[in-house]
Image (cartoon, rainbow, N blue to C red; front, side):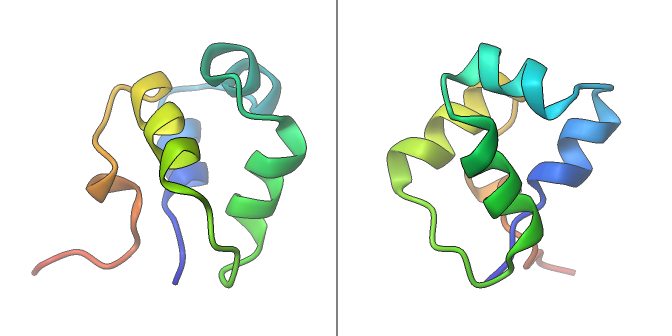
Amino acid sequence: MGYRVKEIREEKGMTQEELEKKSGVSRQTISAIENNDKYQAKVGTLMALAMALETTVDNLFFAKAV
């Protein structure tokens, strides 16, 4: 499983450090989520990131309906 966190973060012009401050999720965790497609983030972490990125949790997942 992979996440679109990096893609969405970069679209919004945010650094990992800015996302860390806005979400409360550590930069190390953000990096792990962005760079390790096997990383299994907790629901609370994904919710915090989604809120900070002004998106939904389901939009953070790579798999999208075509």
